Amino acid sequence: MEHLVVALLAFGMLVAAFGYASVGHGGASAYLAAMALAGVAPQEMRPIALALNVLVSSLATWKFHRAGHFRWRLFWPFAAVSIPFAYLGGAITLPGQAYKVLVGVVLLYAAWQLWRSGRAGEEMRELREPPLLWAMLIGAAMGLLAGLTGVGGGIFLSPLLLMLGWAGTKQTSAVAAPFILVNSLAGLAAVAMARSAALPAYAWLLVPGVLIGGWLGAEYGSRRFANPLVRRMLALVLGLAGAKMVAVPISMPAAFHSSSSAKCVPLRSLREMNDARACQILRKAASASPPAMRAGSDLGPRITKSLYMTS
Image 1 (tube, rainbow, N blue to C red):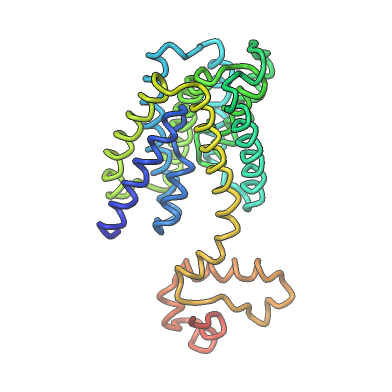
Image 2 (cartoon, rainbow, N blue to C red):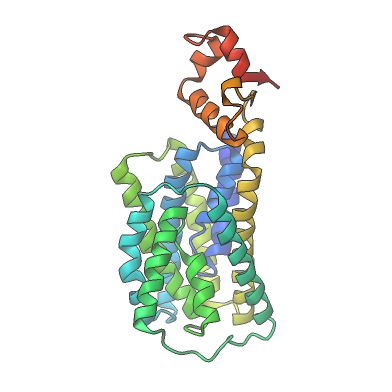
């Protein structure tokens, strides 16, 4: 990867780490979006995002705990069952993009509710303890979602705690941070055990930026920001994450064509099939041995020409 691209990526992640850590989040969704824009290979994106998520959420966990906002009683029912389910989710390949769109819509709605509540700076409901059984069931579902999507799960947990009146704003951030930490560690362990990807060499150049951004964001978020401002920042984080989840699946076909020198043209034998499925088959074939296909190799120039039309 070019040095300029790495530098821009590091700066963007520094800013993202600051914004996410200020509300107790690790920033994995922002890291994934930045890497997609930078053209990072898909197999490298997930381990990088999880590793950086661990670093930032560790800082946020320490800062919010030191400021006295952490509640063990609120944390453990969610985390105890989310960890194994996050590991399970990390070992599963998420089918399709419809799920991401659905999650994005939910997050956008949650962001809108949080932004409205931030105007008065009051808690949305009177605080009460979450029922143990419900907390564990929700933790299991969120752990699985976290593993499937490659994020820590804070974007799912935070709005729920606030809207159900189970925690205040800073208590939510103080619980979300360690929740993200343990789930990210579980997801990273699943990736490592599967040996499906490894951290590239340039990933270590991103570490100083996220550490600086995460430390500053967690410091300000845990001590200096007023509750209404923290809530609005959380709304912005959720809104950006939701918009990214909705927009990225829609833009994937265009991104694929812009990064390739060829356009997919269905074979005659595939005319009866769905166009999207035909293109998917051809893309997989191209990724398996693109040099051979470009050279004609075993398939021959005539078939190669029927597969691709240069743009």
